[in-house]
Image (cartoon, rainbow, N blue to C red):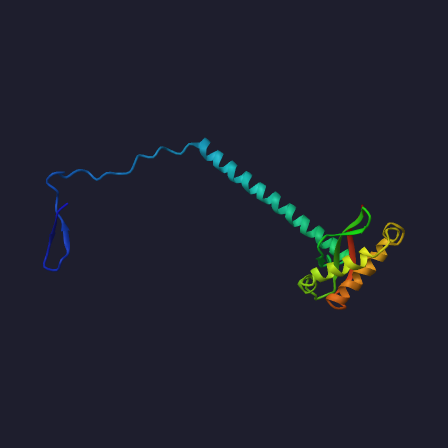
Length: 172
């Protein structure tokens, strides 16, 4: 469409001689709303809301269960997991163990775990010198806990943990 400008530069449209004065084009003619489509959309929206409500109810129930458990048993202890260790006992026998330490309040796991290699070396030395009967007989868990406590206290410092969990101890 050609434009004609005035002294002030305001454009005024002029009719295009090639196109003529055609009627302006409108968008496609819309079909009337189909009630079946509307019903399907509403049903899908309602099912989505029902699913979200059900999922939210399950999440809230689990949170409340966890709070009830914590109120009865106390909060979950913070653990520092030492690396798995396999110590030969002489001959073809060995002990394989996995140990976690229950940390004292306001102690970060990093404070003990930065010494984990030194603790493992100390445990390797003390446990490898132990008799096989000591590790397979009664009181073997207490004996091992005492050795772990000595190693951690000596390498990382005292007062950093409250208890020792022996997660796995296998004498092969």
